[in-house]
Length: 97
Image (tube, rainbow, N blue to C red; front, side):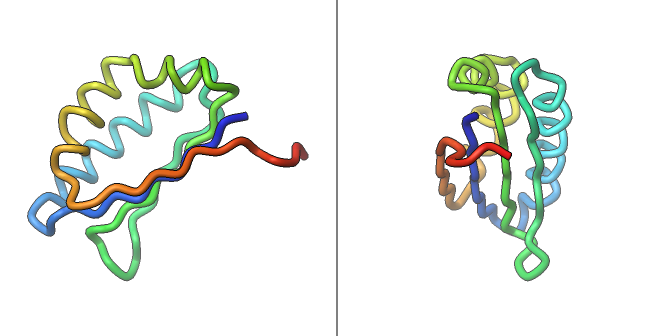
């Protein structure tokens, strides 16, 4: 399993647009084969900060996610352009349940 954690910070004037794009990509990603979960959280302390947690069956499923029109539209076309900062960690689960 491949896991991804991403933290985005957006300018205050982009919060509503970023939230809408994040909701859209979450909905689309969770329909993809190989995506086990894609969840977005907004910080309760700083509404400009969003945290994404994603799990994919494997590298191929993650690569397929990155090739979707939704990823290109919402992530590459909007979120990464609007973000003040982005930190991502990609890893493999070390213990299966």
